[in-house]
Length: 206
Image 1 (spheres, helix red, strand yellow):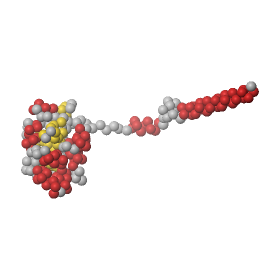
Image 2: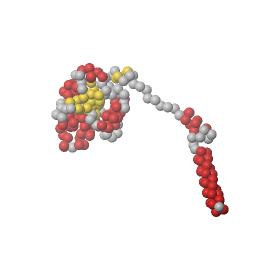
Image 3: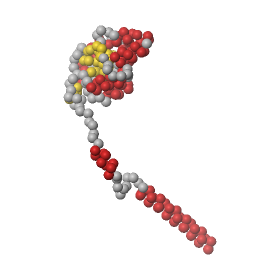
Image 4: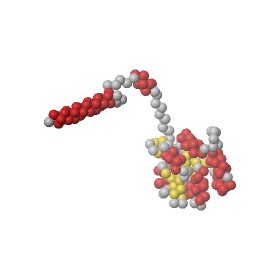
């Protein structure tokens, strides 16, 4: 009987000791919680946040809600490098296919960056380079450093909302969609299609 009592006492003390340890650990954890309302925040950090000035870009005056009033025939279309290559693969004439898509006169524009990319591609893309040098295409000079066409097109349409961007590049289309009021022209089912241009749907563009 005595041995049994001793065993029970040992188990009881062991359990109590474990419970006390657990309670102490929980108390320490609660005291060190950074979300605790009792912890006073440093006044210096609050002042820094209050002193910061938020910069919000002003909306362009050409935008009326989601509609861009600066867009209208004759449409000005900025052409990307791969758009010309995909047009050749699908056997599409650039100017005529734009006319069939928008039912209005379109002026294709080629920047110096796009022309430099086509020249770098070499002899294999000589047909695309010949199309880019078509007299019906207008040439836009670039004053920035480097010849990366995607950044050039994004910066240009961010400053001037009067362009449609013609591209089949997914990354570039994702970047253009973040800019309000800029339509995107792409190739679907062997024909040109337009995105984010309400006026085009009235003419029957896909």
